[in-house]
Length: 444
Image (tube, rainbow, N blue to C red; front, side, top):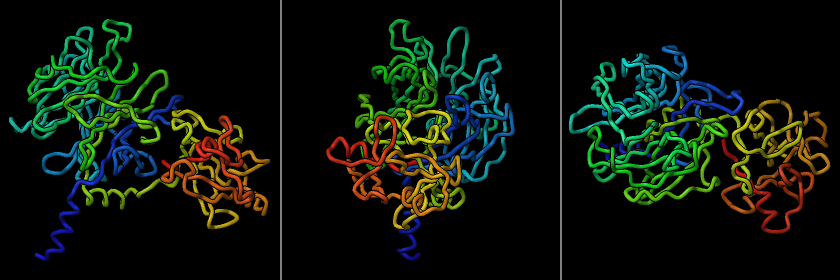
């Protein structure tokens, strides 16, 4: 066989990216879609939604809505998708997929017959017994434990047995293998004011095997995050001795993800990342992440499209905030929020100069951000030369971070889009603080 062909084939089969599966929710329910969404990332931190962040799979079985989707690559290289059957069900949803494009054999798997909910199913493969374990959160008596059912084909499953029970209420377990040991992260579901006052946070435990109950008494981390953090995701960074831990919250604001990192999974000392360093998919809730090859990614991008038609703008100075329009004024708002559609922008060639750009509202097509007396406002394009000049900006390297962006006014070339409180204006940039206020990330 041709040596070049062998190298190309190997590069196509090399894992280079990540895919996140998730459903969506927003604080006022505008973005609630209980369907499978997918996004991809090269670094495990900054995500690009596929299919314009629209559903990839809209379930027509069970409750016709899914939560907590888990995308898993099986031993044969195909995928299986498991998900919570909305809320209080003994069943979970299951779909097969050869490529995350087509989804087949939609079915319900009954994981228990005791009336327990079957929340947040995930999967491991136990090489010692050559079977998959489906582990999930179930409620018996007055609290939750983690249960497991074993399967060879995701069609027939064994009876459930208790898999992890540290003696208190737990949900949302995730498992990562490293150097022959297994690390489980889970949510302590006790209330924060209940002794020992570290509930509603993520914790880590470990085991030398995947055997049931082997994780019970090996907690090795401090509580991670503030109360109401759940839905652990563990990601090993490609070609680096580094891991990321994701969690999201549901209260006091639903749908906000957080990320921590460590260079030693066995020590379990996690450092929170600055929100400048990561950008989860829009409205994503309770996701899962799997690694994919270049060939698999290329196929996904060819089918679903490599980027959405819209972007979001994140503030460097306030990285938990995105630019939106509200009552015709451009301003930043703390994510998440409704109407989330007010933060989606179509970046088009500049109306006055094709070398520049203009920001068209996805929510109000034909309306653009325009400099009106130095304040940015959303206005309908009246096709005048004044409008075109005032709605055109020249992108430059970020004044505070060259990997971000700043936007020079076409009408006033010595001024940039900057923050003034929560509002956006066209202003002079005189010092380092001004540079931070004038720096933004074009994201999704």
